Length: 423
Image 1 (tube, rainbow, N blue to C red):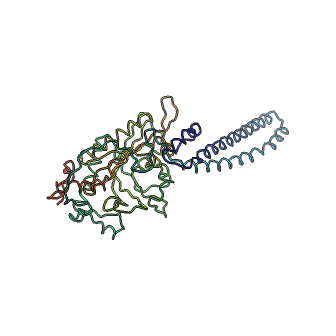
Image 2 (cartoon, one colour):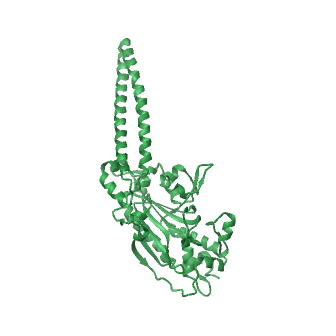
Image 3 (tube, one colour):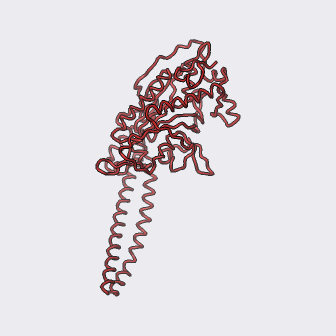
């Protein structure tokens, strides 16, 4: 969430930046500032009463030591009202803080100055395009037909076992999944990321800390009896490893990667673009997370973007990088790059990674801090990116590499798959 002092001291700038994200409820900013003023006023009045109470207690002690018991008892009788006043102020403060917290979490993160103005995905900025789109001719098949042709993923069997969006990978399809996971983890380790294995369910505090709650509860699977959530991305448990932690400045940059299955309800998704592996309820992903010094976070997001582009280049997939416009960004991000690969049979771009800088939006909830050179406590910046999500990578590999012999496996994956073709 945004920091209160920043909202209070930069009201107009906050409203201006929120407009880039197409946030309409600008009155909420003034409500937050007003509640913050009430909170500070109540706190000041409470502190003043507490000071009077302490002064009276000291005076009573002095009088008792001087043997002036009658005077001490008189002041003591009058000072009982302090307890009642302090209780009243505590109750008021608790209510105002509750209202303030409820409202401030409704404000999205402020977009970076480089974020383009726009309301739809069509207004995202194409930063670069890389690679050659293959010409497959008239015989090309979309990946959902290739899945059946080579018997490597069974969508209907997944429907039988669980429901739509829960595929069953078979034979070389399962081995390709495992190969991609291991390859991505090995590449992340070479790039300096420390691998962690984390729970795939999180509690409410963790989901709140990274911004999934209260914004995305409708997209998460909720295990109601235990009040736990299946993770939509490894970002949630990995970043929460540092919740309420004071890190040392020399630890920066903190880099982690993790493989997990991910679960998303994808409520409201429909149409041809969700066919096959294009949009699933359960899918595999390797996530990269960094916690860094605030002065370095915009260097780091470029570094992370370049790293993920390197993965796509090694997989020999044509791709493009988009800088998302304000209206297409997530609630929590300050800047996001999307990486999309071209799916030659579908003849469309498919998103395979989002790389985001959250600045202090997550760390303010997480309370992940460090002491700067002046010895003052400061919030760190958090970033993450898919490195990579598997379903659309698999879809593009299958479609772009289909030949008369079968599906040609990218050369970097052959040591992991143990085969050169799916045939």
